[in-house]
Image (cartoon, rainbow, N blue to C red; front, top):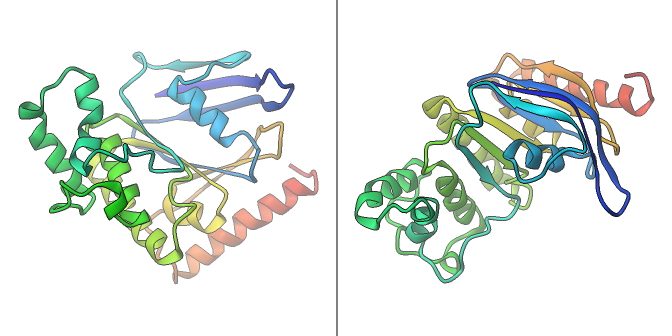
Length: 241
C-alpha cells in the first residue's frame, strides 16, 4: 500500500529527526511505531499524512494517496462546538451539508460509544470521551488509513485500556490500515500486529517484531511478546541492532 524508502528529515533548527528510514505498509495492517520520546515517530507519521516532506528518500503510495484520518495526542476539538459538530467538520470542509451528513455523524459517534452525547460540548465530556469524539471525527469519512499519534498517552490506565480494546474492535470492523505511535511497550504489544522499533534521534528503523494478535493481557504469550520487545530495545540501547 505504501513504500517508505530511505526517508530522512532535518529541521531548520538543525535537529535531525529521521535518518534513512524505510518501511512498508500493507492494506489492513496495524503497525505500532515504538521508541523513546524524540526518536522521530511523530515526524514519520506527519510524512505519511502528507503534512510534511522528507529532505531525502521518498514515500510512494500504490495507486495514489488514499483518504487518511489523523488522531493527534490531544483531542483538538473545537471548544464551542458540540460533539456532533466536531465530527461533522471533515465532511463540512468537503462541502457536504448537514442534512446529508447527519447519518454519517450519528453512525461515527455510535461506533465509538457516544450515542446520546451528540449535543455535548467538550467541557462537558471526560478526557476519554473527548478522545472518542476525536476518533469519530477521524473515522467519519471512512478513511483507508488511520494515523494515531499517542492518542491515549494522557489518559488514566482504566480509560486507556478501555479505549485500546475499543480501537481493536473498530479496526476489525473497518479493516483500515492503522499506524499507531506510542512509547509504551505494553500498548504496542496489546494493539499492533507489527511492532516497529525506532532508535533514539536521529530516528531510524531498528527492527520489526510480529505479534500473533488477539492477546489478552494475562495471556503468557502477551508477557512473552512484551519480554521480546523489551529485550530488543535493550539490545538497541547497547548498540547491537
